[in-house]
Length: 350
Image (cartoon, rainbow, N blue to C red; front, side):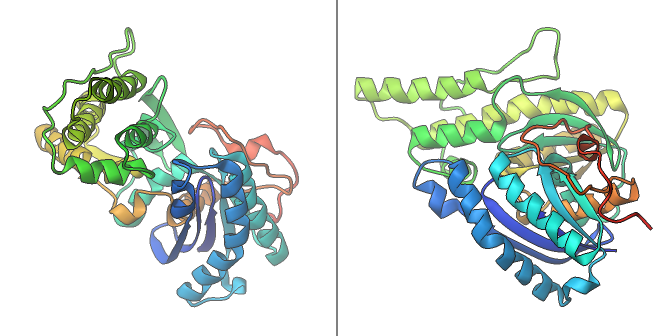
């Protein structure tokens, strides 16, 4: 089954063609990073307009790279939640209209489910159940993947996501947007013990975590140094921050691995590209005897290949979109976003 997938939840306009949920036939990503870097972060309205300009182009490129025409598609999928609502609506409405015009099923996909599915593309042998750490710009959580469309959140952030904290710290340290890769690069030359930073502990919820205090501590250190005329060890602070994020996430993940009895563990989301986190996850896997699945860097950030992979499994589960399928800024990972728009399906499932 060949699915054309569209991703437009934030500032990347992406299209991909995926076969049977496991094979990438094409994967095109058009980034708006340079535009939003001028503002120090994503401007939603600008992002939406950028998607409108790029979505037709990346779709044509994805089909050309896959060596196929529209008529050879079996379905069309698009990210419908969560994300920036204006951005989501561009991809969702484009995908829905294309599916309707072709007489093919439309499959709405949850963005975080898609991040998890990136591992199916990198590791075709990986199957549920397994444990995954989701760490992205807008979400941070530990998830038990019971089946391809069945998820249980075991722990998560009470405030900022890890990726959001990276972006805000990057702004304070003056390295710009996007924060994740730039902080990672700056940290390579720093001492992770240069600064003592706080670690969160949530009473009565040992698997939950928080990044707001950590973010504030970095901001205060930088501002205090500036006010006193002291030289800030930017590389050391970046390294200390990466270490603090890792020490917030990995011990909780390790607890879940030991208590769950599951030995397959993956990581998903943009922060999964962080070199300090990847090293710590490898060390955790060695301690616990877990089988660790880390997607390649190209599949950590937002892309349409991961959406096409998850779309295949959503289709098998009967989660086909409707004529009035909507997009949603927020949606729990366990929520079936098809059921929010119960109308006549675009085409009946054969």
